[in-house]
Image 1 (tube, rainbow, N blue to C red):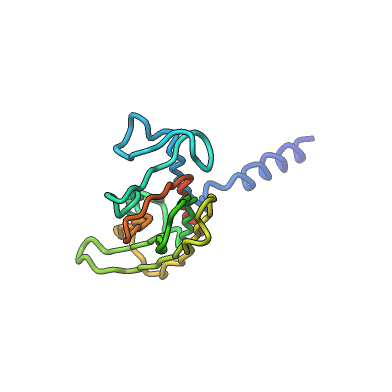
Image 2: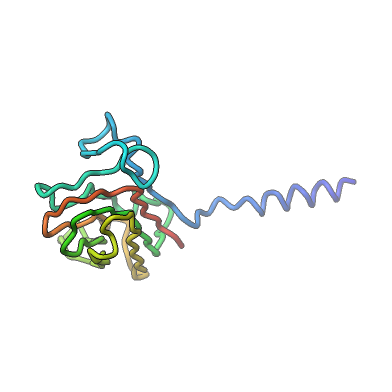
Length: 168
């Protein structure tokens, strides 16, 4: 019976790897009340009760900002997946999901990728906007990652369920 117990223990230890394959950050705006200065509205959301309100006086949504070392100190997770749900009623120009990776040592842009949401896709319904990018192997933990929604024409819209995932 001892060999079976040893084998099961070994199987349990090898099956529980501590190596992370992904790390996700989500802002569903439900926890925004009392914590940040993000303007939210109640009642018209993709999920839950709250969504971020982008009005003509705001060009950008709230921004995810972290160094790669903060995201995963053990090692770089090079695949970045970002998605956000957007709702507009009178959009006439695209809004853009932006990924910007920079080196704080010299301010140099390492990666800049965008994904546009066309107005006809979002007017009157919640629409998912997606962006995917793989970082080069020589990326550093000190690099800063920013992800945000850019509203260059300062239109009125709602943003909800912002998710940024870093994967192997």
